[in-house]
Amino acid sequence: MSYDLMFQKAIELQNAGALNQAEDIYLKILQVMPENSDVWNLLGLIAQSKGNLTRAEDCFLNAIKYAPTPFFAHFFNLALVYKSLNKLNEAREAVMRSVQLKPDFKEGFNLLGVLEVNLGLHNDAVKSFCKALEVDENYQEARANLCFYSKDFDALYRLATEHPDDFNVQLMTAQASDDLSYKEKYLRRAVDLVPDRTDALLLLADTLREQNNFNEALTFYHKVLNIDENNIFACLGLADIYLAEKNFDKAEKYYLQSFNISRDIAEAHINYGTLLFEERRLNEALEEYRQALQLAPNSPEIRYNLALILKETGDIEEALGLMFDAHLKEPENDVFAINIMETLAILFENNAEAALKIAENWQKTAPDNIFSKRILAALSGSDDEKDNVIFAEKLFDNFAPSYENTLQQLEPNIIKEFMKRNKKLVGHILDLGCGTGLAAVNLKTKDNSFTGVDVSEEMLKLAKQKNLYDELYNADIVSFLDKHPARDYDVVLAFDVFCYLGDLEPVLKALKGTEVWFSVESGDEDMNKDYYLSSRGRYKHKKSAVLSLLKKLKFKSVNDFDIVLRKENGNDVNGVLFHLS
Image 1 (cartoon, helix red, strand yellow):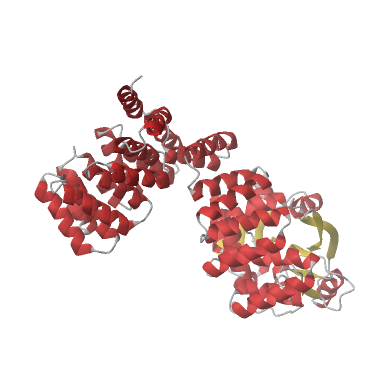
Image 2 (tube, one colour; image 1 turned 45 degrees about the vertical axis):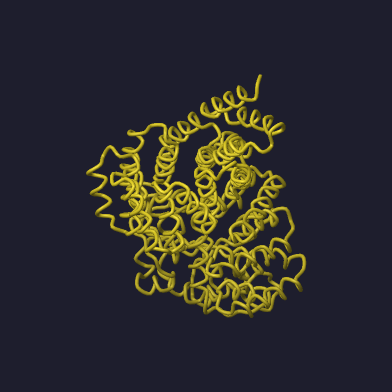
């Protein structure tokens, strides 16, 4: 077959979406004709379609280099790639060259305006959009851009109404809308006008996914792949939905398909690493996060997620280093600080001196951070209780989204132990530290009603969704009991709550006058303190000290039961369940 016929065959394959086959033919042609500008340009378009932007850049530069005379389209294609790579100045230079070569190139002026907006050159952008309209006064995309980037959204919406058959106007109006339902409306119009435009289909799929309309989003992602089997963003959209639905097999299929197209998208490695982490394939997950970090070395999120896996695999010191890197980049992110605190507690069990030194240094660099204060107090044996409420509030506000999944892994046992000793809970129940409402999930019947109290607003939002509580209060339990006497309730429950309080006298004094069930974490009876912070940042209470306090407060009927509260790192966490009646 002659090279002309090979070239035509490759173009046919490329137009049909068979990019890999077309690419193979182009590469064979280049072996004989390495300076063929047209082939380099077409290879650049294939690489661009696959999301391999670095490769696309090289190809377009070669197309420009080997062109017998400068060709405006080569510079325009290069500008699009530079824009995708966020090389905005280079993109502007390239598109300016394209409009110099073709002064009536309206699409070039339009792209130039978009780039100038992104570079903060607002006046230049307006001039560029106006030049595009001088070339073609009916070029509504440029007019829509002029409205969009001038933030004249009313004019843009009018334009969409006046030109319901203009695809680009509908697409631009959709992109201008912050309201997902409006965005969806304009995108559906755009897709109806041009059903095979993958950019609109993809944006519609993304918008549906944001609204948790997963089924329809899947349909549109598949439509994109039917048009362009190498559309990496459709592959990733499908993979992310299947990951959210815990359909790990299908999610993995599409992550791997995306990697066959390009391995240059950090977020793809992050999300695939999350899948592998969920499946406990930790070494594979570790590799994905390391690749993500190479692609986005300044990302605190990637450093943090890599640290979590290292923590799981036992590499505590490297995990801490990455966590502190993330924390320094985003000191306001409490999730990072919470995990530093928890990881220092693990290090303390094996190397107390190193953990304490790190905690001291952290407190010096972040003296106002509630979690740096807490872990230093826990590791150094301090009993400062003034920040207990703030600590619990911040901890559980951040913990709320993953609370129930995490708790399942810890094999919680308190409610089971309670149910062994109380077969039927009757009357008005006060659930102190109710969290996400797990006590009511297990104990609510037609014979009782529940009121919940928690210091964490985020936990209460999840409890409210269960529709099991008549009332929910966002307050610390001592303040609540000052205003709502315990005697107004038939039974008070306080499971896994007092470990966030040191001195129990105020709360126990407020609980007189009704039946009470509460738990504490067991403290070491040989300690010279009645209660103390453990390295985990929770209080442990000596059983003997609690019994003495109850006697002092004149509780007459006291029963106590030694139980296992839950597991932690595979070990039993021992506690005591108290019943006051």
